[in-house]
View (cartoon, rainbow, N blue to C red):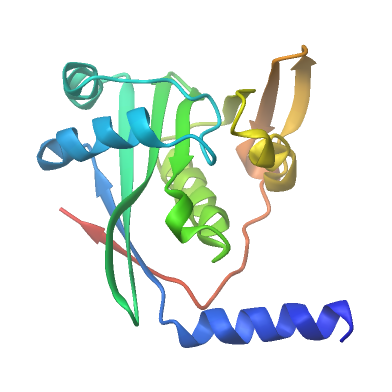
Length: 185
């Protein structure tokens, strides 16, 4: 089977799953689950920063931070809260402090739609440029090039960390149509 046919088959399969992301913004009801995610997620966690419930509560209350959690539903049911971005914003610049997703939803292109959501939200806030970092751990090597895949430019590289920068007007959205997105208030 050629590669293009495999890719088309995967997209067909994913379309049939009826994937729907629900976004939660600074949601105090999710503090416990968000803290759990930061402490348990290893493979798809770009910085592996660990945060307590008090830390998460602080980020949600603090004006300089945005906490975006995502839930995922599909034909098989509700997956619960499976993704998280903690973003620090100041003037027209943002920094992704934490970006992670539960390993049980990998392979469904959710990360691309999630980055679209993050970038759209930052654009609405008037952000022009976003910085990000990948910190290597023993378990997260599979995501070491993710920011490059998203279109970020590498600005610094050490053995254990890579820093990235993206001007939001240079971002190319994923154009993934088969994943629906809704927002919870």
